[in-house]
Length: 301
Image 1 (tube, rainbow, N blue to C red):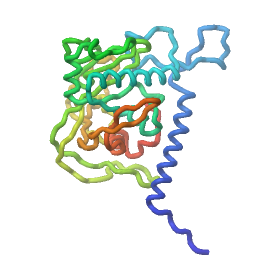
Image 2: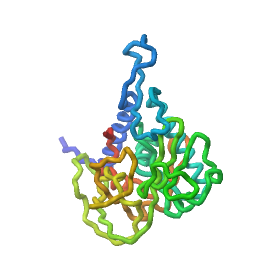
Image 3: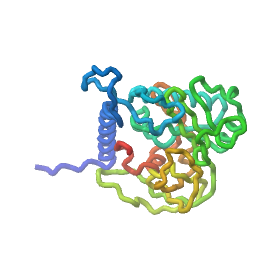
Image 4: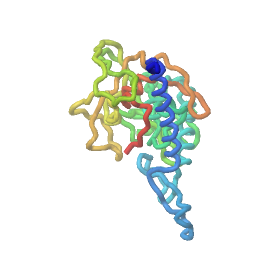
């Protein structure tokens, strides 16, 4: 018998990615059936088999969390989609350059939907866009009823729980869900290109490259918000100004900055039933944040 020929590298990579996407789809399906909390229905006669699955009140704006009211996983998924669409309309009407980021971008890249177990929506804007939002009144921005825009250091908007790290927050006043909006500034700097695609099913290495470049970078203020970023450098003795009750005193401060051409020019991508803007090079962008095996889903603590 003739020995079997090994699969070409391109086909091997395609099979690996296909397997990861299938695993991702199965994981997303399972996540819809289970979540962080279980609470009995108000009716005491209800059997244990008809328990309502309710999400935690954590990572929500406490002003809009109603005690004893169950918010289901399905309600959260719908609220996140509505929240993102409402914010998209506000930013586009204000001619503010924006893109979906971090966990929101991850869900759209994986399955053209929001991550079912995510805590919030993540959006990036430019510092010029932040200046525009600070100087435009709510009526001018056409903020939809049922939502609230809070802006840090603005004479026209309440600050809420915004900070230098998260200068804008868009809040759903029905459930208390919110979008964190990060302002990206450009700078010249050294960038270590240690991100590349996983081409086989082996374990991820901590260091996968050694290219060091000096180029135009873009990123928000260093903060604890980026503590999960795999390749972001740790910033020692940094104060990111976060005063939220949800802030983790044990979290580390990291700086997220990537080459500008990973971000611009923005491209159109689809989430749920509408279109939003995404970074130009989504794959390396997500690898930098979540690691080289970012297609493999995992539940967050």
